[in-house]
Image 1 (spheres, helix red, strand yellow):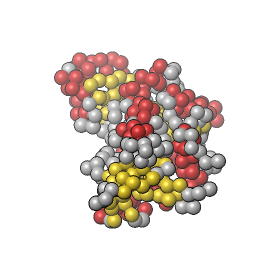
Image 2: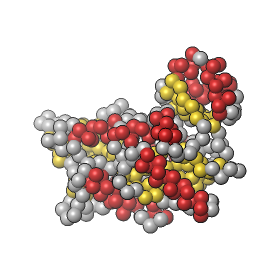
Image 3: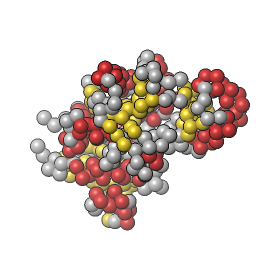
Image 4: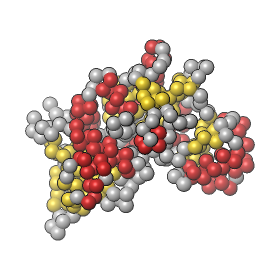
Length: 358
């Protein structure tokens, strides 16, 4: 098999820029160099695209921008099928597949995926619609409800309406959800802007925090129970691992708990009965199909204390690939080590585009 050219896309104008760099460095270190020639393309926080010629370690520690870089763009012209280097005389580099290792807004929300569709280049992960749907918690919750997939009671509102009619909203939420209430920006990744409100005063503050991240706000009933996650992989015939469990060190699984403090722990498989493990696994595949996911997704659930109810929380279309990330841990635990996993994800991208290697 001849080598193919891959673009590893990382960074991004997102609150999760640094986590994207950590995930991308993991991809860079484990891609099979006998199969792929890799171009590293970083997107700065200001949105500039730069071709980086250097080592993955510089991606990981953020020093890549001070290295050997050339401004570039991914061409939406499908006849180019690649990158355009913005040198004195522009140069077109042919690309066979793109690995968009981008988290959060402007990365896994359908925006980059739309550009990739225009370019005609196969890419890893979910398509435009599934990416956008899973990013918007209000839309995703509505579709999951329609598909009959159990979740906790929830509500949503536009931030401007919330701030102008707080007392009316507070009364509505108190009756529908009770206290405490989780408040989330509808469109933000990795626990960014999420707060737990125990009373009206805390609710108002939580709304302000969420509104700083997105104009649409989601409200959810507090669920006391275990937080568990499945790794789902595949296109038309997806499969899921049994779930692992998040043992958060804080009141709930925050961004800091995930990536900064390093004090949360994971347990694989989750501390559930075999029947419950399999039920979560089955619901993960059902949710994946309902939201039109392809390639990969991490499906997050609560198992409620007392009732044992299995409640979907959310689906993450580009989960973390850091040293502590659950998705690669789950796949490795159930028999797919990281290099093999990355190869499978690339082949799924090529399969979807009808360009899979024979």
